[in-house]
Length: 171
Image (cartoon, rainbow, N blue to C red; front, side):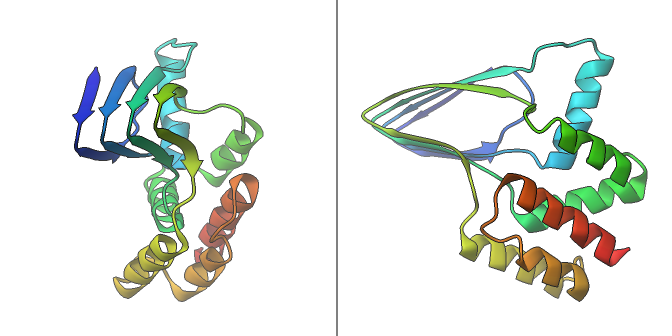
């Protein structure tokens, strides 16, 4: 599949599929899937016998491409929903944390007179706004929200551990 952006902007989610992105004098801002969705996608790939993760290739010329991580609120809500539905258990989450090096897609890029960044954290403002909105809507309890606030600006294992603690704080 192709995604072309010329002198414009594109914003979307990265899905576990083969895809080619071409950005010319524009901006492409992609967000990775939540870790919970990555775990389910990996399970599906294993059921289908797919051994290699899908490759996504980005060509950026005189523009900018950014691949961001989902907000803590998105990560928390997805994990809680999947645990609640039985699609995932906290034990599945713990087992998946052992395979930290595996991702749902493989990213390759060619950049010329442009910028490319991968695994960018959401800004502090985006994190705070996401948590505030979800707390206001009643989707995140005060106890879970307080735990999630400690994950703002954290990367990798610290971030995932914060999400796990927030799910357990709400249980």
